[in-house]
Amino acid sequence: MQDAARAACVSHAFKRSWRCYPNLAFNMKALGVDERSCGEDEIVTNFTSKVDNILKNHSCIAIKKLEIVFRYYDDKVCNLDSWLQTAITPGIEELTVQLSTKSRKYYNFPWSLLANENGKLIQYLKLSCCAFSPTVGLCLKSLSRLELFDVNITRDQMGSLLHNFFALQRMQLKNCDNITCLKMPFHLQHLKYLEVFHCSSLKVIEIEAPNLSNFQFMGLRQVQLSLGVALQFKKFDMSFPGVVSYACTNLLSNLQYVEALSLCSRREIIDTPVLPSKFLHLKHLSVDLNAMTFSPTYDYCSLISLFDASPSLETLVLNVLQRKMLHESIVGDTSNLRQMPGHRHDRLKTVKIIGFSSAKSVVELTCHIIENTASLQCLTLDTTTGHPWHSCLTNYSGKCLVLHVDFLVEVGKGLLAIKTYVEPKVPSRVKLNVVEPCRRCHDLEPLS
Image 1 (tube, rainbow, N blue to C red):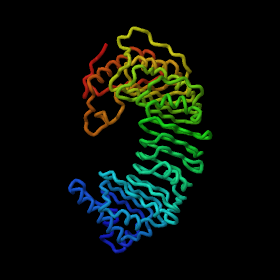
Image 2 (cartoon, helix red, strand yellow):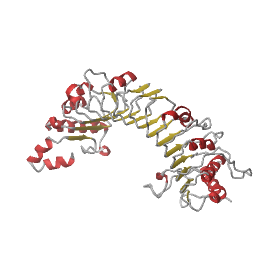
Image 3 (tube, rainbow, N blue to C red):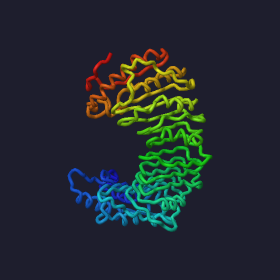
Image 4 (cartoon, rainbow, N blue to C red):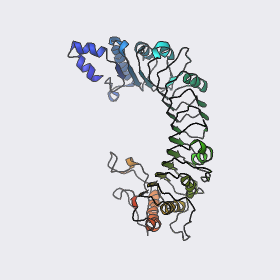
């Protein structure tokens, strides 16, 4: 937009060309609106007048891509209805309306503008801070990607909306808090990717779209997941409290073809159960149990049943980070390590454990992996938080994130556990990487 405006100042030909430019991006940076030097009212007025002037002089018949990103939206000042009525024509292919407002008042998006001919070519639609209103004649036959962020839409309205999509390939829902049940019907034959994040009222997800291969869910509580019997997921990510035991108990039959599985839980009340069948095609497994504290009764060795049910596993990433470790420490424990029965892996090559500590069951799990993985090539034990931006080597501040003294004490115990119990078991063919906090920024007390 800025380049086009500059060019228009030096040539009448360029000026005419700019008026037919097909891609319009209205955001603070593109329009040169400086938040640091203006008050909010001035920002709204400045933004609105610039968009009004551009659309007034633009030949809107040629618009293919329209992007409106404005976090100071005010329905009393912004002429958003007028902008969309002017810009949305039968030739439009991509539309983004990304708003934000202090009052949390949703913009009533005029879906009627996409009815009939106006919506027939649109392929990409992204809305945020908008409300849904039923529209007769809506048929977005070409829409392949839909993103709804903080959209006020109900279960029935979502069902009505999806009924009009036939080419949809990717769909993302975030913070759509009025949806209680999400149904992905069978007629969505082209849907490959579905992402559902933080929809607080959502209780049930039913998926019948036959070709969905990538599913991601994140929430603060468990949802009931109903999956079609013919689904063949390749990548499956879920995050909510108790998801590890839930997935192993309820989803195994639906994930037989999954190749990459990611499970994230901030709370596991019961140990991981023994699995009745296997993830025969699973190659990449990530289990994130990162939490402020984790139940001291949880046995990390129970995860062995999940590993053993994955005979094709090649990569394993396990996050057991606890800001305050409550598990029994192996340091000072005179009892022997448990010898856990399990499957011998001949394909697992890379293992990374983030938040490695002196928790006895973590050490026992690590030793079990070493002793039962003939194919292991690289083992990384990370005693830090695992976040790159927490390190002075990778962030912009040049200083490491300050770590609590109790955490640093546990780091010392974890390093001692590695030296005492893990290193003697690591074969020479295996590369052992031990990651510890920066000693320039942190005072690590040596333990012996």
